[in-house]
Length: 194
Length: 194
DNA sequence: ACCTGAACACCGTTCAAGT
DNA sequence: ACCTGAACACCGTTCAAGT
Image (cartoon, rainbow over all chains, first blue to last red; front, side, top):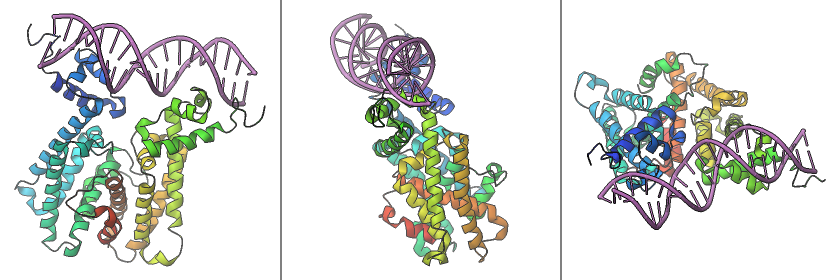
């Protein structure tokens, strides 16, 4: 019995996570079927239950991976470099770019099926992402941007702003009255954050 | 054969819309079952198909109704009254309150299953809602708030802001690092919009 | 330790048939 | 004109059994 044996897949857990992530991104979360997934991988319909207690548990693991990726992206745009002058703007663009590059994953991460709140990995990594945002807002406010007593309001509102822009963009909600909004989002966010 | 006859329900279409809306709000969209709905109303599992071509068509009708309600709420807070001084703030609060009072409906309206884009009723009523926002931003900018050449950026960013706040609130995403954020959202939005 | 097959209780949807 | 019942092709999940 070898590692490539069909009976013992060997890395079924990883294969499931990988295939599920791909399937969600290409067909949407609501079309995801555990049985289908198993079939595609070449394993029985019930094999996934040896690695995940339920479909929901699989989705929680995927959400956790999403927050890890987001945190990594944001921390990367925090590093010193040519963009240091407008760090908040850079981070805002990173955030929205993440959502645009993985819209279905982003929706899953922030959909109140409660995926996020359950797992410790989600909490940890969303905390990391939030930390990047807090530092950027702090830095910007220390240069005199907005009134200091509103610090918490500014932090949450900046987050709401990028989260909202992400939603409008990935759900195709930009009104046609404003032409080319989808191409101009970066400058528009920038203008509003100035 | 009377109107209360079970065989001919009489107002099945309305009963379906009504029950579905209630079911979505109390159990979540992903739990909604057409068969269950029919059973609750007291009609056969396939009766809904005499009034809606598919589950999706039912959801589109509900989304349209949601946009009608939202537009009505926003237009009401546009009327002259004691709150005229800060009309943009009033409208922002109305918007977020709508989302908070009907979270599942709000999610459905703005979920990229494409419900919104299909129907003419959705387009019309989301246009009405957007119009209220545009007028409020216009009025505010005419008092010197922000630079005029960024008008479109301001309109879309204000929408993103309220849409984002709505999402953070109804999906329970407010970080615990900032205490009582759920109770203080109105003043925080206000502070950021000043 | 990991996977399968049959079985259970569900789905959305179609269609011929009923009233 | 409106509704039903049987049927089809799916689901997630459980569990005894296999290797």
